[in-house]
Length: 308
Image (cartoon, rainbow, N blue to C red; front, side):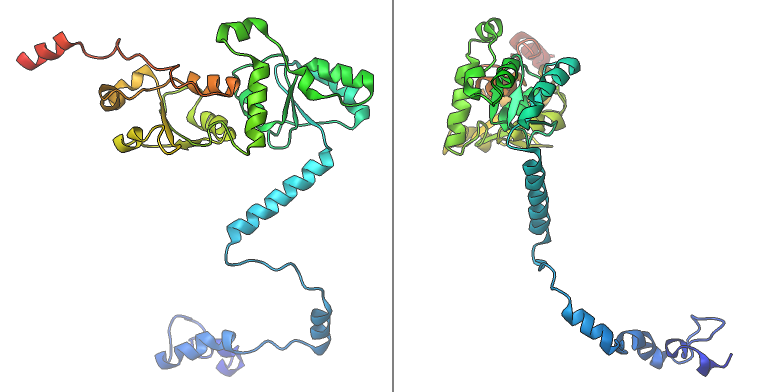
């Protein structure tokens, strides 16, 4: 094959050894040939391209916002397809759930396992499972299974506020009213606020449930989880000031890491602070504090170690 029979962009290379450049001065011209030679588009194809409807403009300046908007639009479309009432069940066995759902099917009610699209959380009582805690924060209403039965008999969805679950034993043991908790949550929604909206949580990796699950629970109530570091003393000093709050969630086994904070009198909380606050829809900073007295070195032992 004659070298002139080759594609022009390979003319300046040895055909058998492409990297053996014949004339280094002509290399840029050879490499740029494919980029500088225009592509000829037939007139017929040009007409079709010009006649085509313009697509949606893409915001190249901020593609992340564009992607988020597309996802949000898709979720809204899915929610509209599900209907105005979307149920999420908790604490109910599958057979009973199917029976209840069958009775509500004529009313166009849907069921989901996604927290962000549910409108009604159906549960016989309050519980401290991650599913209940997240759904209680995200679902607009909390109803007992009786709401489904009465709505099916009435052939229309009834007022959800009259069907808040009742569990007298649990409410008495925890000294709270679930109905009052629902009212507090509704007041927060009306004021466009969230329970943990101003709280920063520092979570130890030793807590249970695991940090990722606990972070999802806290996030559903508007809180922020700070990972991989302990709070700074100046942050803890700002607790309760200017509307900012800081909470350390840990276990007694974390004492060595938290000794500095404990000695300075800063409270360390168990994970129950998160659970109790969400169920009651009220943060009680005086409860759920960890007691490190069983693991702190006594004064006698400390003086003995210093003398030795």
